[in-house]
Length: 117
Image 1 (cartoon, one colour):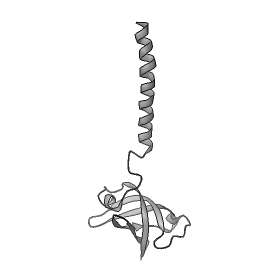
Image 2 (tube, rainbow, N blue to C red):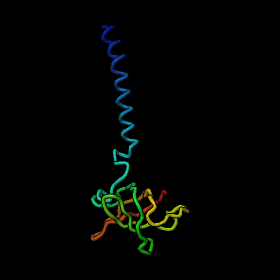
Image 3 (cartoon, rainbow, N blue to C red):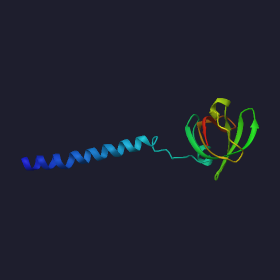
Image 4 (cartoon, rainbow, N blue to C red):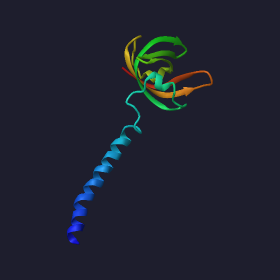
């Protein structure tokens, strides 16, 4: 009986620890979301979904609205002055965008809260 108990302790305890570590790694990947969302994926997401995108700002549309493009398509971004964090970004510079999907009845855009170059 002691042999079975020792076997269980030395086999099951490390196994449980490994499973817990895998679970924590999965949680640290923002609920298994992709590293970057593509524009095509962003267009299908529900309102207020947090997103991280990599691509280029291709045009300043005025009133804090910009066109963003990646290999899958284009989407409008709303970037307030403070969200640039003092960075200067030129048209077609590669950037990383952090924001939330903003869906309306006839539009989808991303409200940006941070831009990285």
